[in-house]
Length: 234
Image (cartoon, rainbow, N blue to C red):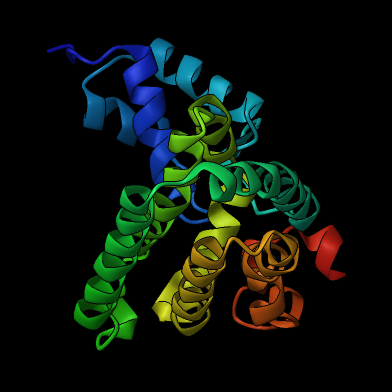
């Protein structure tokens, strides 16, 4: 029996699973398994896999199968640079026009993140990285929404083979939680004080935090296997 899902829907499911680290770098995507899972023939499966390859999520190796690609740090850090450049300007505009209600929304989102942390952090081995990240990003989304820049936000946060997975590695077992909570509180204070000069240094520290926290582990520690071997000297 054929699935009711379209090729686009199947692509989005697999794209999200890879981007959210539900399917890890280096894992094999079996055509037979995907055919059974989605109840479709090989032709649409191969079409979806080719599209995933075009967008950098998998590599199709003749006679070997389809492997989920490792993460490349260089594109990930350039994505961070792009987000920093755009978000600095958007947050500057937000600070200039935000109302008390807007600030209250920011505070509420931060409080929700605190509640999630209290619930998830005790079990670090099963810390839900995607729930935490979703709430984290919800706070940033507010200044894009208020300034009518949601198109930019959707583009910056769409699933991306390198950056999407890199930021989730940083969240594993709650490693980034203390920094994120502290920096979000500083963002709130910045907004309330309309401290435009503090925007760029704080956002730079916030967005590049993963590079700082993971440090040498990117190429010689527990996460080495997730990154491209040519970048870590392998």
